Length: 504
Image (cartoon, rainbow, N blue to C red; front, side, top):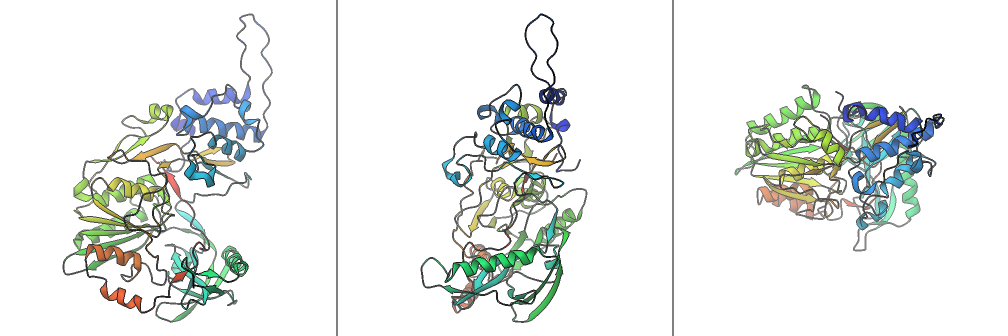
């Protein structure tokens, strides 16, 4: 079964699909026992049918359906109040319980359910989920400064398997020109206590717009300066590529212990000995052979992915310490629990299965406020069994303890209603505001490549794992205090949210 394609017949008891058809096409029958002609069928155009289906599937699958979403004998009693599928979904989400901390998302718990148009169908919603494959160059920029006078684009992340990755571009590369244009610098003021700011915000806005436009073009000529001061020119072609989610792995050798490092950009499909499974197995085999005692997992750019992939990696990290212990349980609405809670159901309890021979002492997670979904799940399920330390660029992760699966509607809409909540072995799942950091406001030092032990977030983890290991790195950095200061909140080409998918 394709993991992302869970259709109604796989989830709905026999007879419900027929009910759906009847629900959409005929009006309710009268209770009068005297025989009389049947009323004519209710005529519904294609857009009305889609609106009706959005209501139906939200009522069927939503985590909040039982107590907050009203039942209608005919969906159009509700859906005919709205002109689009998106407005129907917005109204349904607005019925979920109030949560003031999500005031930017309507002030309710469900800020997660979404839909995207297929085959050019316009619903006015932006696509969030791209699994396994991506389009573009795989480049992500921020605005950084080396002199506290001007800021210019810096590559802070290169997605594995992308054209940029294949061309040898790296995090920390300073952009000198794009498509022959070199005027991408903006004057800044770093005198205040709240970081550097553009002297002319409109000039910064124009640079951001130009960069985003360049990233949408069919080709990209980019000139960069690398960490070692060498300069290279690369010609990239916009294309669809298969994501390699492990973009860095290392083992750091110290006299007292060995520490592993694994950087994951997302949780892509792991099954049938595919590329991802082979690569994950190879990395953890190396960790086993080199007897690592601590592990640093870099999730700062990880926005989620497949639950089953997160389970697979959790088993690898858990090793002998968690074998056969409870990993995760699921909460869903009454219908979903009835249909999918059994021994072979989608929401049966998941147990660790000893995926490696590791017996780790401590696990460090490097996170940001975009670390979400399956990435948060991985952290949460390991907390009951390990000394886990969360090192964050802010104070916590994104906050998404719920998941969903795809429902195709009329071959025009891909609909993802939030359908289940995940709990770890301690029953903890209430991280709606994110998982709290043990060490907060640690700089994401984009002027060094991922895996460099002098990079601030990694250095922070290694200093805790092996005290005294980062003294020289800290001394080097203190000699250049201004380098790496970033215009906060000015990332270019934002990382897409991968969501949280369930596949069984």
